[in-house]
Length: 139
Image 1 (tube, rainbow, N blue to C red):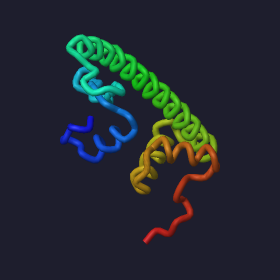
Image 2 (cartoon, helix red, strand yellow):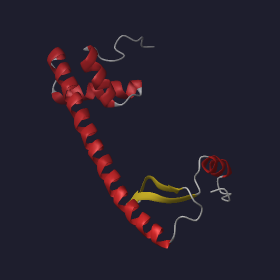
Image 3 (cartoon, helix red, strand yellow):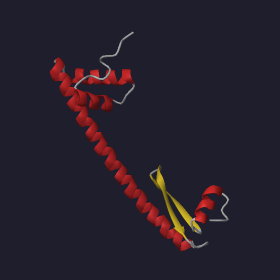
């Protein structure tokens, strides 16, 4: 680490903390860069060809795990957004005697006018029972 001139400040600080060697791997799946896996050792020159092969295998497995976790989180978020949008539509439908399509159009229009995500507008409506921005002045 002390001799690495690619990242002088990082190398200096890592060396001061006792890091003698570092081996880094990019985590990616199907073109998506997910981060990096960095391995550290106390002594200089601690990593050899076998270390690189094993590290590459660990990085591949880690990338698959991270990608799977991200996909699961995205699905959970999508389901949550869909639920809150449905709740907001229901409030508008009952309160203003709108169809489902009309209620969605109201949410979409407010989202566009306020430059906010549709799910955020829906969440505010379900929390406050008021259409966001309904009391603002129109010029």
